[in-house]
Image (cartoon, rainbow, N blue to C red; front, side, top):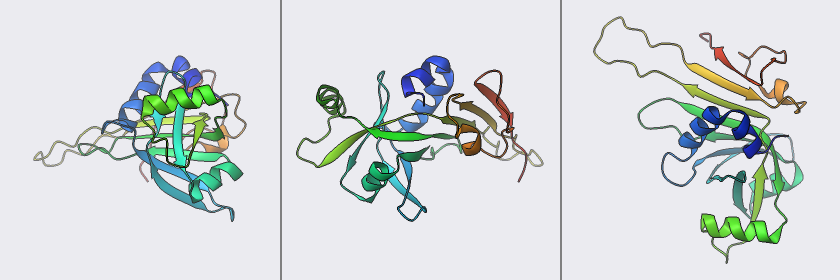
Length: 186
């Protein structure tokens, strides 16, 4: 399981693109998917925190926090931009941060409210994906929008990375850890 920092060191342009989409409205904003006790999905809006140290989220006492405490699997998706259909996605495992000095430093940097019952989680990265779509040029008849450009990174150490990857990604390990994927129409 790679930390955000390890992923960003391996694929800085991809990490920057994902960071831009997650922080496009100022502080981080995205949708966090967790696994309920019955195995079903649960989706919540969250404010992820990306620093040089990693990808984090302050989670208040809630069903999503209990999901992460019980089963750390997560997926994080960016909020849609107003001007495009670009999207960012990361998935991996969340683990509680227990070092008090690290928690205090990140809480201060993110201005986390000290009186709130929150737990800090660090999110590892098994899969990272960035999809860019060209803007359709309005007013030009017959001009079809181009296919999206998809960039995928799989942590080669994560046994679940291939299974968690989108169906358009070949189900074999690449020689490089990231690649461009040509999407096909659904």
